[in-house]
Image 1 (cartoon, rainbow, N blue to C red):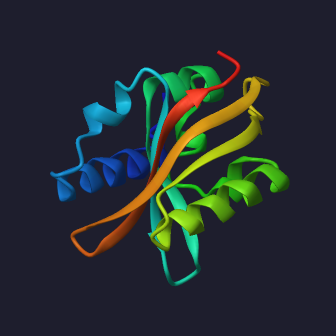
Image 2 (image 1 turned 180 degrees about the horizontal axis):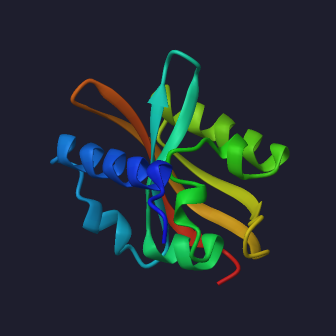
Amino acid sequence: MAFDRSRFRDLTDRARLMSDLPNLTPDLIQSFPGLAWIKEWHPSDRSYTMVLLSDMYISKLLGPKLLQYVGKTDFDFWPMDIAGAFYENDERARLGEALWCEEAFKSPLTGRSGVFKGAKWSFVSYGTTYVAGIGQDAGQ
């Protein structure tokens, strides 16, 4: 198997991020028995990139293709209408409105559709802003 430089960089970037954020508990997000995630806010281009996902999120919505979403925006992954709805609620959460939301989705990888029902909020760690979400797929 040939060395895949981009995959290696993705993995090392993710490891660096986790070491830079010791007060984020990756196990808490990854082991959550529903849908949970953390996105990093990038003020330079007003975007959010996916940082961390729960194992349930990965298995139900991504299949084995985690790296197709981590490090990317919702607009890189989801259909435009779904990504737009996610972005709007992420913005509300980032601007200080911890909120309960319901967001319809259909995974472009697994085809699973449902409605995320849960909370979104923002926090700052070491000068970087993050938006997090935790909830359930209402179709479960």
